[in-house]
Image (cartoon, rainbow, N blue to C red):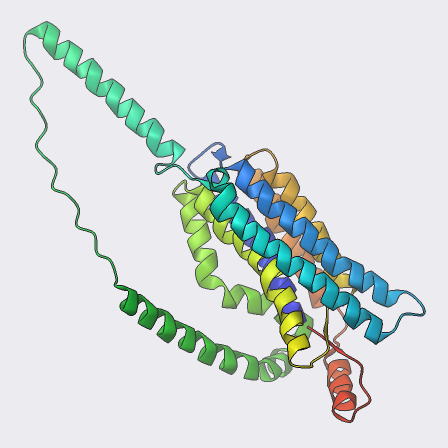
Length: 321
């Protein structure tokens, strides 16, 4: 679970964001987006990276105990959950104008301006020559179809159930895939599962970027990372606390370090409010480096199995998500 959460954050921040900039570079020399909204989300991710790194560093200090780490993790999770609620209120209520996206993309606006100028030039030419431009035929309105509330809820319920079923089969096949293809568990959890599990989301972000909808693409890539970092991870700790399960924020030094550095490189790319294909290439190259290193990580599957056996016998410490 731990590797999958970090892998989901890395795939959104590095792979999806990088591929989005590359896809947008096929059509545009420079892709502009709402820097204010992106900077707000990145700031939340910086907070989340610090909140995950500090418990990991604290655990490695001499003299610390697992009980102290659990207590520290629960306090930090409550702070992160409160920040996520404030961010939602900030985004939807008090500063909603910071996240507003124009109905038409910059490329569409430029095309409309060019068409309007050509239309005016043609009208001037025909007026001088003595002929007048005939009015264009009326355009039939496009009929839009909308799902009702109950239909939308039914589709959402069926989709969620299908995803849960597929996820169960996917998790059960991890051991066999690792044994048949000699694939490390760390690579499966950090790289393979996030890419496969978020394939539809990744496709949406890249397609939107290719059609010059960078704000939509960023909302999918960066917004999903913010949701996982500030909602899924801390509320997993809080729910475990409610059920008496000791869940901590010790994400181990490699995962925490990679996430922290990935947030900072994504922050540097998004800071100026524009991007190009070269910046996307750098993000994808960073993700490739992380994937290569993950392949050579020591496999800790047997260690996790032993720890679970000890815990079931009443000897183990706590569970790190």
